[in-house]
Amino acid sequence: MTELASKTRPPRREFRNINVVTDLPGYRLPPAGIVSILHRVSGALMFLLLPFIIWMFDTSVSSEISYARFRNAFEIGVGFLPGWFLKLVALALIWAYLHHFCAGVRHLWMDVSHEAVTKDFGKASALAVLVISVVLTLALGAKLFGLY
Image (cartoon, rainbow, N blue to C red; front, top):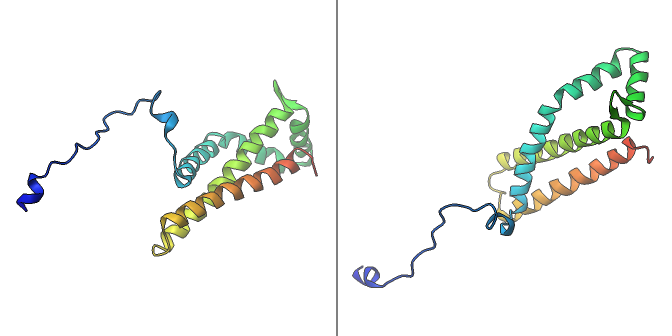
């Protein structure tokens, strides 16, 4: 025991403060970290755009006239907001919902199967969430913008 105490070890690196300018640009998050942050961002986006969601739902189901006004809002616009901007906001909501749903299913699966959770599974499932949510968003965005 005294032999271990007598050997000199090199001093360990100390990390005190993270400098935003010098340290953060070189820092790389693993895919699971990116999915975790985007899960929070998508939840916040859906919460902040809740009045827009309620307006869309209300005008689309109230009557045939309000539904026609709803469809025209995405073509012509509402007030000073052009139609393409409303479509971009709707596309952001589509991405937020799809990403939040896929990441939520991933988190639930990891909570249920504790034995199957490894570093490789975390990376693979995070990449799957990113790819699935982006592909579904592109498909629904193409429908939103009238490509099919």
